[in-house]
Amino acid sequence: MAFQFRKHYNRDEARALLPKIRDWLKQLGRLRQSLSQQEQRLARLLAAGNDAGGELVNHWVKTVAATKKVLQEFAQREIQVKDLDRGLIDFYTLAGDRLIFLCWQLGESEVAHWHPLEGGFAGRQPLDKSELE
Image (tube, rainbow, N blue to C red):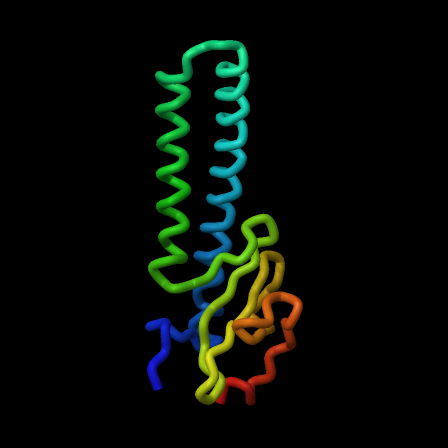
């Protein structure tokens, strides 16, 4: 059977990545806050009829690039970021021959939920070890 994703995580692999994921989410939070502040400053300058450029725009471009770099950490590993505000993350996994998501969100101590690909967070269910065997 052919699957559209190369990486399928088991629960232990997903759990092992949580420290890095927590760090990446913290970085993204700081970067998003910085982008918001920079964009507000840019908007004020433009609204006043000033040119935008120089150090402020250069810093904004660097912050966008840093954000993209952190998001690439997820993309390279085929980890889905579903909601940055909530820190909602999905990992592809196989349950028998069915592709599902392991589901985790910031604040949870471990990967303890799953949902069908089409179910989303509303279809989230507690993970039973037998479902991954």
